[in-house]
Image (cartoon, rainbow, N blue to C red; front, top):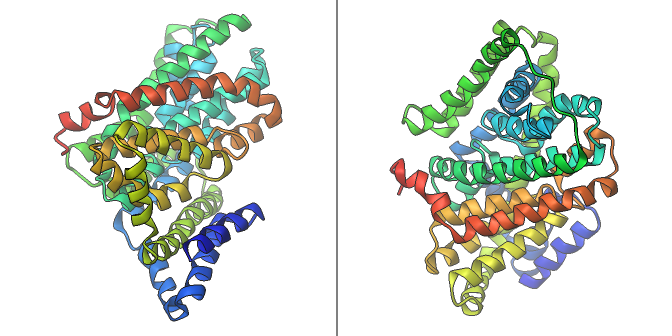
Length: 426
């Protein structure tokens, strides 16, 4: 029956059936074939997959990101980043990467980060003679790195489905995100030298001070969110509610760029993205129940343990699986389906669960910019109106660099673990 379930899922995906529906169909076919009387359990498993307090953070962080994107914070973050790296060769590209990482500390969605920063920075990049394929590759790559920046939604989902502390995952993701971000900035700098891109004009000190003053509030929001979590003031879920209140207050009453007529559009955008995430999570819970019912996770874990004599072979095998799946589907289903299966095997082979979770998140980020279905790549191409086939050659060096850095954080666990250990997470 397990083979029938997998074949049903693969066939549905190849036919273009939405991932959530494909997961539900595969679960129903499996139970119809083996134990039809258990079909009544599937709705219960769907609701059980959503019955989690930490999952409230998903729609709330999405809402916070939408509020600050429409309320002017994204533009001010870009302007602030310009004051620090704008005068370097490829300054605007460096600004895009730095701004996306800063914006990721407020939002939680890589695609929303890519859209918000890209829509602000792209017109300026065009004006300064950045080739559109190169510019698109830069802010698509930056969006992929944001899966490691707390409060990334993927980190929340990994914590929920695997039982790892979400706060610990947030702490563990910070240093790898900085490492990957600096690597991308270094490559962008070198490519800008090759392309002989123009430098930014030097800003006057009054303008610099004004930009820094305007950018303090978005940065303070990051301090509130992360400081509150690590200071024990509130949980990650409560932090998402704080982010919504803070973002709405600043956008409405301080910057005054958010209008009441924008609210329906923002709520619709939030409901649409959150609904996709939560619907996939619910149907994946049904699918996982059927796999567990047939003991497939146990058999898979035994098979991996048999053919992976140590954690190095195991994690390379895991990387290949997630990289392949990231090239053909969205990141969420592999995380939800595979994390509960692979994590026990990783722990049995001596891996730290935090390290394993961050490696999966980093791998998923690479998948988000990998053709043919990388969501950040599609968002970037949609904003720049540049065909994906023209962007892909310019994207390949960034992909290669991120793969190299993935191996670095894989084989140097201290990059991931030192901060959560310093903060007292077990």
